Image (cartoon, rainbow, N blue to C red; front, side):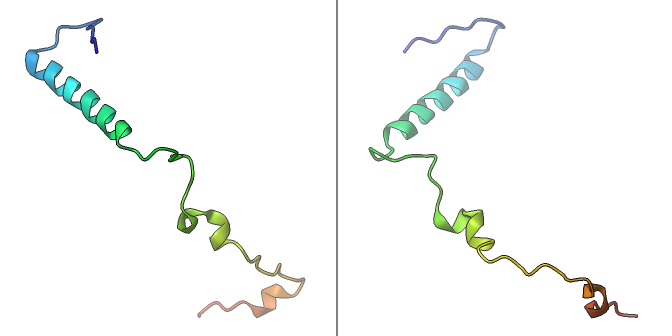
Length: 70
């Protein structure tokens, strides 16, 4: 792996921190199970689960059934 600084003059500490992040990301990507698709979502986060049933639309006299505490 070769890293080239294109612009700026990083300190050795800054360069070491950047390299640590790159290596950690590479290690995390290498440990993912084969065939894992990161674009799939869990069922609990699916918005269609929450909005599975449509609410009835209000009719012409729906305003008479509202309640506003006075």
